[in-house]
Length: 486
Image 1 (cartoon, helix red, strand yellow):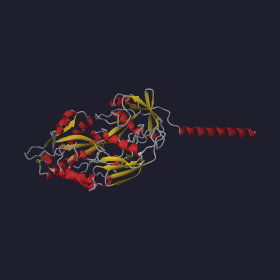
Image 2 (tube, helix red, strand yellow; image 1 turned 180 degrees about the vertical axis):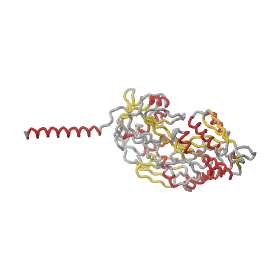
Image 3 (cartoon, helix red, strand yellow; image 1 turned 45 degrees about the horizontal axis):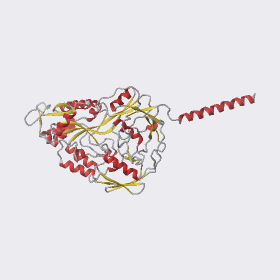
Image 4 (cartoon, one colour; image 1 turned 120 degrees about the vertical axis):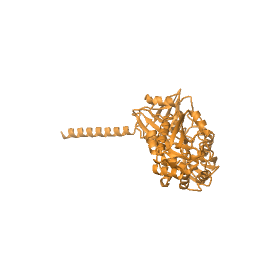
């Protein structure tokens, strides 16, 4: 009997060990379910050749840069190893890395990629400060700046592609069979193996088509930039994801009342950016009182004298400008004794910005200023601004990773209505490292050439079946994809 019991116990123990081993094996197995993303087969997957936003969004899975930007807007090494930055020269030593075809990443590939980036519409403007890239050995590259830029290292995030095979070092590689393309795990990638080893690409005509695919459940994830200002209704997951786009209110300093720095300071104090972000932009914006990303680590020690809102400070500033309120202390009067009236131009194609304009109107009325909103189609809107036919306007610009404000204070592009030589000098000193970030922010808040409102957010959308944290941003719309599963 003892012998029989011993045999039974051994069988039970063996079965238990087998079950544990089998369970452990299952936990390490990649997700077998299909993960689907949008794709345009008529377009290239190369970041320097593709024309569509759909395919460009896939580039983040296929290619890496020398660096990538962290959530607090600092450069983190990816393909770069040791580096130095002295005067106008950045020298980068490459880590040991391979492209998805197994070939070694070399300095020649980096120089080739840089030249492609400089010649492309997507990257050329941001890379303006970097004049040249030169090979200094098989794994060393020297970048020379054309002008001083203390944050130029942040620009070395452009995708690195193989000169010979056009492949990348990203988490996935493109696999083409017959008429179909899939993304498969890149076994040469220097990083954690993703739980999802294969990604199916679903055909769509454009980015609107990609949104339709998500709504119908045919794809599993989309980084929706909300171009028309409409939030997509969904039963799946949705998370605001920061973009590098600054939303601001332009001020025409060539208009008599707006020339006065005290008056512009009053307008800046009157605007409640937090309320705009939560109400008008429906939390798809991150409020800021300066032109810079509020999550940038360097901003932690910076004091902005123009805070996010202070009605009392606003009214004091308007009085400092030499104007007066009526006997009831309600309406702000101009030199002609009539209530101050300003027009505010907004693009009629964006519902969030129209809502923001209405909120700004209410906030300025609270300070005694009448605001007339003019909603215009994009082409009319652009013409009006370029010709200076505005008092205020709602604008949006993309800020490069080196925090360049050249579009406002340098080569232009968004400098409409700005008339401050002092601030242009201050900006030049800041970007060249001759004055501190605090010095520039203080100078900016003294002049208030425009009112920063928020950094735009995209909608990171996923079907409910996708297990993903979605702590993503424009700098890596697939951040943490290694841990996603479906």
